[in-house]
Amino acid sequence: MNTQFWVIQAFNGVSYGALLFLVGSGLSLIFGVMRIVNLSHGAYFLWGGYIALSVIAATGSWALSIPVAALAVALIGIAMERLFLRSEGFEYLRNGVIGLGLGVMVALAVTAAWPHFIGGGWAQFGAVTVVAAIAAYFALSRISLVPIDNDVLRQVLLTVGFAFLFQQGALDIWGGNNMDITPPAVLSRSVVIGGIYFPAYRIFMIALAVAIGAVLWLVMERTRMGAAVRATVDDAQMARGVGIDTNRVSMFVFALGAFLAAIGGVTGGAFLGIYPGLDFEMLPLAFAVVIIGGMGSLGGAAIGALAVGLADNFGKALFPEVSYFTLYAPMVLILAIKPTGLFGRE
Image (tube, rainbow, N blue to C red; front, side, top):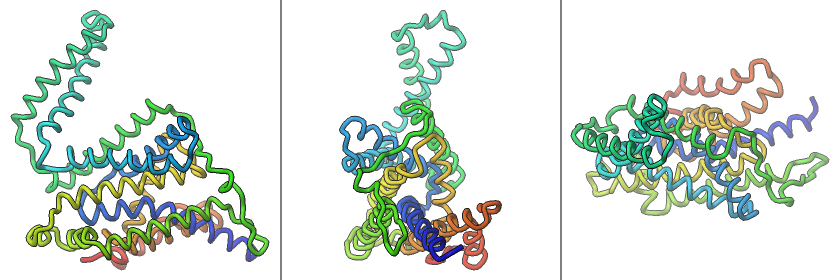
């Protein structure tokens, strides 16, 4: 193993860490602000890649696919947070969406059990769906639900359910084949430095992560919204007491987390590919970043992403038989020494 080997592995680890920063920083902020264990966060990464593929197929523009995919997934995140992760507000719309879903499930069950009753017609199927949806809506309106904010188990079950729904939706829309996002030709080349070839696309990933990290730092440290976010991370109850609209802050942070994960999906799709199951592969890595860095800390997310990226690349290169151990060993060590993470608060 010569110097070139170590340089290349370190570069690959840093570039992979840049990708993990995009996914982990949003998850860290969601953790810190909302105290919600969002196990569907990996689905935002997956959908960002798939939506980018659709935009590229329709317009031929890779550059356009990044903001379009990120904004689309951010809107999905806002809808999920407002309708299902909030105890108050939009109750009628939430019950209507759940009732419609239950109505479709009832209609599908009736179709499977009594095919002659439906007769294969969309009119009969729609009628059964509407009747069942109305019944479900009125039943849900009568039920007094326990606030999801106070129940971690319900948060986990709900977000896991959404993760599977997003995965199945992606499978139904885009199919099960592996797909690749092809970057522009200028990023498909390599840059030679000291006789070592560095892929330009990985350099772009590092630069993008640095730029996004700098913008996030400026927003969090130099704006009123950033001050509100930091106050909510430190003490949400006290922040509400001094007049900060924590509901608005939560919506902003959740949308930002989905936005960043989608950007990661677009940029990561060029060398990871996009395929069903990628969301559940990225999710443990994102949680490792959050656990190492600490909840609600952008600096912690950057350090955690760098540690996980380097551990993953060097582990696979030096100890392929125990690469999972080398990947998660830093996380176990941090948990043993400082359970709140490097930059987490007690």
